[in-house]
Structures are given as C-alpha cells and as structure tokens.
Length: 137
Image (cartoon, rainbow, N blue to C red; front, side, top):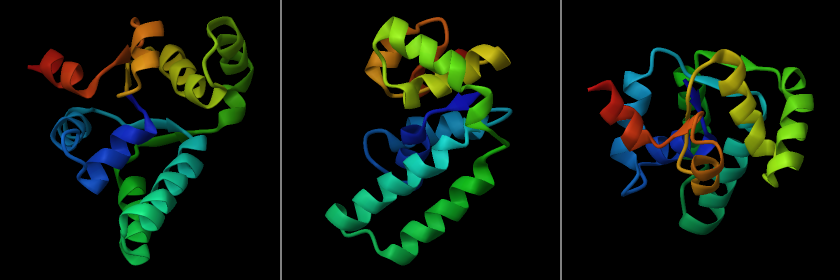
C-alpha cells in the first residue's frame, strides 16, 4: 500500500479522530510505500506541530525516526515525476499529491489517504484508512 503523509503523521502524532484508523491501516498493511518527497512533507508537518501545537522538538525528531521504521520502501520521485505532472495537469491536482497516486498505479496497490480531493478524483486508487481497514476484515 502507498500511504499519504498525513496518514502516517496522524498515526504518529495521535491526532483524534484520525489516530485509530490511521494506526490500524498501517498495522494491517503488508507494505508501506512512499515517494521520497514524503520525507520533506513529514518534516514540514512536524515543524508546523512544533511551532503551533507545542510538540517538543525532541519528540518531533523521534517521530521522524518512527516514520522511517514503518516504511517498507521509499521510491525515488524521479521515477514518478513525468506521469505525476501529466496527472496533475489533467486533473488540476497538486503534483506532490499525484506522486503518491502514480506510485499506487505503478505498483498496482491502493493509496491510503484522508485527502478528500484524491479520494474523489481517483476512486480506483485512493481509499480512506477506515475503508481500507474495513476492506481487510
């Protein structure tokens, strides 16, 4: 499975109401795939939480390491960018999001995401964490 950055972030940060579904989806996934752009996105999310939600810097750094331990494979974005750009232009979706979509398409797995736009525009690839967990039961 490909996991959107926010699914991992919500699981790691324990964000209610997303925490349980995000953690369950990660626990049940046979693999956790991300494009390498994930690292920059997660770093930015954690920076925002340190800045605005008083998450201690030391904890944020620890969460970076926890995220790495959950990931099965990091795919170079250079393998995905051309198709991601085409998909972005065709669907008016940010390219950093379509990197995740293209990775799912190429690996023939679902993209687990909370992103409503991705869920709506790419229903054959994108699935919410709750739906993914329910599908596995």
